[in-house]
Length: 172
Image (cartoon, rainbow, N blue to C red; front, side, top):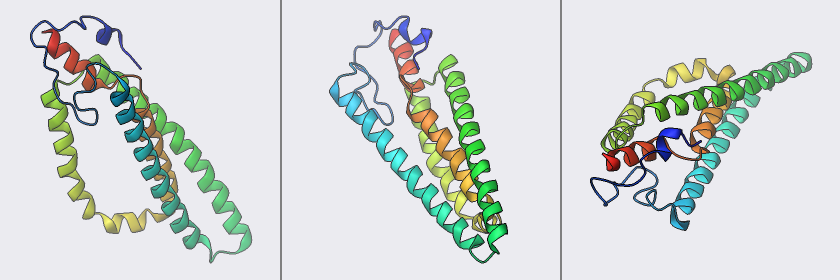
């Protein structure tokens, strides 16, 4: 999803050395085969990770409802399937909205690195919420479908917001 802002002023005025960005490094500047290989590799890895996590969540849910009587088990599968479809669509819409907002005000290369660093630091606090995950086990497939939709929307865009910010920073 390219924005108008990214196509304006793409000629560098200040510096001809492209800044290194998360995921794409310096390949974003020329967008050659290495760039597309990195983007495709990241997209495939993200999709594979999401599918594996969603499959694990589905297996956990299956183990949870396997002791229920047949009628209740089928009903829980239908409800969980519907919740997963809604979660996937909601995640996609939310992810696209976030990309649009970030394209309107793209981060500079330094802000992109700071955001990635902060995301890694915040992951440690997720370990402390394992008890909450046990309570959320019945909703886990729907939550994972929402996460899958958000991740796909953020991964499969034409131009990353960090690229737009780096182009603007080079242009001055």
